[in-house]
Length: 507
Image (cartoon, rainbow, N blue to C red; front, side, top):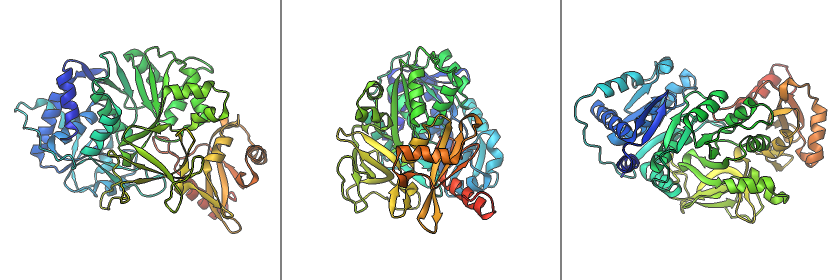
């Protein structure tokens, strides 16, 4: 049993329902399934042992995901934003790959050892195919379905192995089959190489929901497409949501009357952005979906009722839940553990560990990192309140150790980003002869405002104890981030070190 089962069930249940809309063209479930069978047959005949996809979100991505499963070979969408050398290194890790690439990215993979074919050429041949489709491959549920590379924000990207059983467990555990109505439509703008780009295909097909693709995100186009196509749900990353809110006049309603649910995830959501979005979409249910590549996507949710209750509550503890990732989804267990691996009490910080059938914890060329009982170390620093709500405060790798005290950058970032003249901020630790590490806040000023370092340090000191006050603050026009909004802290630290080494700013 493979993820092909999802498409088979949906096509059988509603063959003439609209399935995918991209660039103004719509395919029904039957039409889409026919295309998948032809593409899967072509992949079988090619002799490829793996499909690598380099392109944007859209019908081709979704079709090739299912076509790879039809052919019984893994599918791996890779980040087209990477440089040529890094793309070559990633692709060359994969044996027997057929690389399908959009024309605009073809030069980026010109040096790979694998066979390279244009996606447009391949899909044109698929459409022209007249032979009867070959039977779908008999796939072991424990065979690899997808290889996804991590974002590499703190280290080199790792290839995560997601097996059919992991993905089926995730989908069937979080979505009710056929739960969507014929008018339901999901607006998709996350890139295909992100785990959410895969998860949205599988979950929306299983629900029987039409997917509307926006391959190249732009906030006004997102709003226009949501209105024109009658989107009822959407998934964005925090940087996208911030840009959508900024595209609206101050205090204005977004005016997407069909939209019922707006999910976000992929990186930490700044609280000011979330509060502005809740005001701009007053009748929309917000969902914080927390997950990792290694967990086949979502493992915890903060639902619409939680968001509204937090916004409307005068209780500081309930209001704080706007910063929570919610509670584990069905089938997922969560524990917060100390460095010795022992569970900690509610309210105490530690590393978040999770367990469930959808959790992989397996990397290409390496053994599984699950412990003997099947628990996966997320490397996220977190705590859980008395009611079971989880709060992620940062990555273990990001923790600053200043004078022997562990400091989570997120604690300081949340204070600084609330300053009316601060647009965005990243806090990092840099080597220091006296403290071991010094706290450096890299700040992007709102609208290019002229901010004073001492004034900002004093602002933090009024909110947090003195040891949390940044030792230094530097100002930058922007922060380096991935396409999904994750801050590239290693690049920030490297930039600070390079500047100091060249006799520039002291930090």
